[in-house]
Length: 193
Image (cartoon, rainbow, N blue to C red; front, side, top):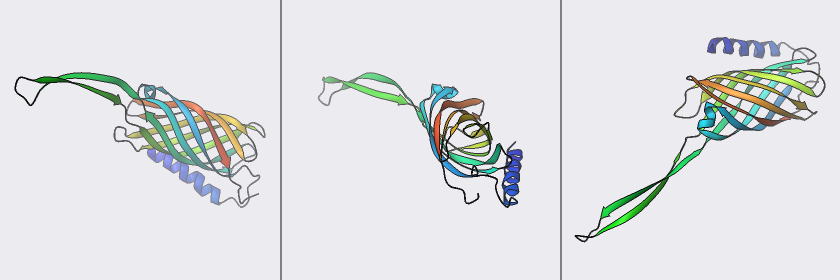
């Protein structure tokens, strides 16, 4: 699966250099942020999902853009229960003792991913679009391995900005680390017109 994704990404990247002139200003670099609510297996260990998104798209047809995407996706580990332990200790003077009250909080480790993906965006009109990222997410956490990455999204765009809703996830060793949320992207001016 990794080889297929890599070959597809290389084909899109290589094809793009063969284009002399792009048909409109939709192509180019964009970067943004997203906020999400973990769902599925991720909701057991995380309360919040935040991240950075970067992509570069090339205009392929009147309504279709293809490109590459990456970024950083962080699922913030949630705090668990507060545990209290009462310990009866022996004192330093023979025959004495004292009680010690210990509290500690359990927590879950943050889960981070760096996605490497091919991206597609279909423009239904000047403003409305839907898109899909498919690729592999590299884990930055010690307790996860990474896995297949998917990110369907839809949104509204202006000349310099995109506002979107998404459902994204990583299939990581039988777990579905996913979230639903919103994001905003800033579109940098393309050198092509």
